[in-house]
Amino acid sequence: MTPNDTENAARAYEPAAAEGAPASAPEAAPNGDALAALEAEKLDLKDKLLRTLADMENLRRRTEREVADARTYAVTNFARDMLNAADNVRRALEAVPVEARAGADGPLKALVDGIELTERDLIKTLERHGVKKVEPHGQRFDPNLHQAMFEVPNPDVTSGTVVQVVQTGYVIGDRVLRPALVGVAKGGPKAEVKPAEG
View 1 (tube, rainbow, N blue to C red):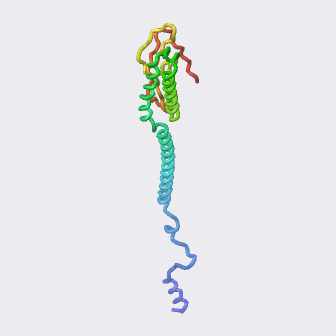
View 2: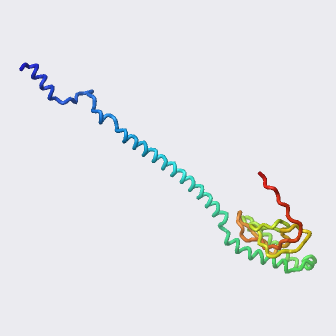
View 3: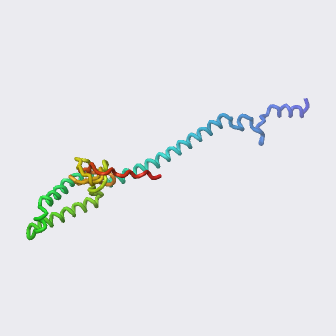
């Protein structure tokens, strides 16, 4: 055996991990199935992220709406209780006959003026807090704002028109705090139906 043969044999037993030697095929490229699984997972996570962002936006809007409603309607129970006081002030004024009120002087005039001032101040205070009086006299009956107590036969007034208010109604924001108790005309001409726009 020549020295060259020995050298060649030794080289045959050396590992082939020389610099720049190509790696085996399975280690160099990821498996096609693994790549597809990673892509599917990425799309799933992206979908979940978008849904979570949409849910958070909806929650933010709902919370803003609830806070606005809480501000608007926070005084509802208090306002409802104050309506009794407003009714009593109105009853006090109506207890004084119109003739006596017109010819009043001295203490009676001062009393009537004081009660009227108190009523105006009470109504203004309620309005500052979003409570408004419903003035239905002469308007078309609206079951959302009015409660019909009786019908008044009147051939001169359009049927369904409010002709008498028994108790004043109030709204707070866009909600009815107390419906107006009303008398509604019947027997008159029918109300004209307006054609739908659009």
